[in-house]
Length: 336
Ligand code: 13P
Ligand code: SF4
Image (cartoon, rainbow, N blue to C red; front, side, top):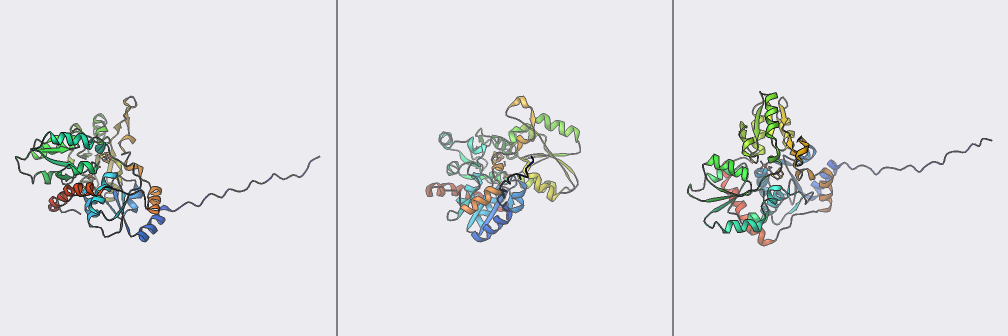
């Protein structure tokens, strides 16, 4: 006999409402009187939502001038530390404290101090991509935007240590005719670009202009028609509409390049995986530290007012000095 039994109905699971992170971040930004700063290597959605996007120098300048109570820094930790050094009394929030930098890691402060002590007659010119402790051991900080102009202001016979990027240092030695002593650090992203893949790409697209960030090793820089900071690379492409470019830097930069030059074509150069058996790979030229930041993490960090950058007062005083010297010496460069 057939019974008319109904299947027991399962309780319907209502998914939790999806947060509109962009709207929530906008609300928190207003409530907290916060400014959101982002680097060009951040994901597209973060660049679109930020109040200001720039290279390291522009972000440091913006941080130095802000009237906001809270700075939310969407970049890597050394950049957020720079904002804190210039604004000791402000709350500086970073979405993920693990957002380090391989250049910073390649220069442990104790080892660097021993190197510096062995060369007491040298001035220490330090790339901003380093820890606050290394900044505190430095005379002048520079970025890829202002390094050449700042070094050119120093007396010709001044002995100099350049730290921590050996490739940027080598490039600057050539540009300025100096013989700076170089610390052997490097950026894991820029040294991974494959010269063979670059040549293959240029052979397939001979009309494309190669442009590069100076953190690339010299064998790659030798192919470039223009070398400069992220902002300088963007300006170079924006000033040359409807052309093709092969880009030797982190692919996050393509967002602003495409926005400013919709008619141009951009080719991203594959890198070499650290597992060399895998050959060339596209994704290994993305900076793993920059890419730790997400809209979700930014929202939670703003809501919780954490994580924040905390540095001891003594370290802040010592590390701020060479950073302020950089801002002073790069006034002539003009960009904001
Ligand atoms: P820019 O100062 O050119 O933006 O470079 C920062 C950086 O970390 C490059 O890897
Ligand atoms: Fe550091 Fe290189 Fe990432 Fe820039 S791209 S933040 S130098 S690891």
